[in-house]
Image 1 (cartoon, one colour):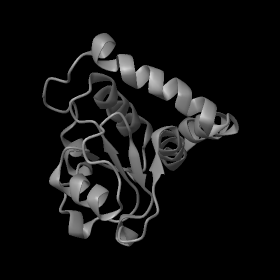
Image 2 (cartoon, one colour):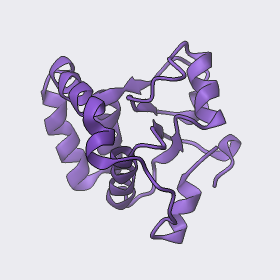
Image 3 (cartoon, one colour):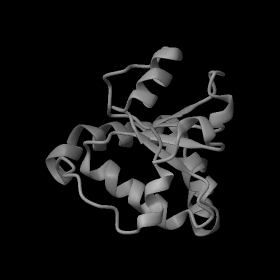
Length: 145
């Protein structure tokens, strides 16, 4: 894991116990060939401190939070839910950025409505995440906190 004080660039907070969320993070790890994104579970001390600092819910783990510039984390600049997913895809570049752009054309109210339905059913469909080793050792340093 990377020391939070040394990281720059975007950090994505995700539900660390959600099977869908963890699979999504693994997909982003594969798509982000430039290794720009960093990740931390919403349940981590790092994420909890950020959420408290910016008045965001600390127990509502049906959301993703993307901090676009970790070095400016004291500023209330963040993206939630599908806006976070769109921003994360665009950060990855290549095909993922194109997908993020296309998804960005859909109004966030509609994207978020679908997101909330999926969030409600995600544990029933994808289950709770069982901790297992990351497939690539170099991915470990992409996690903070």
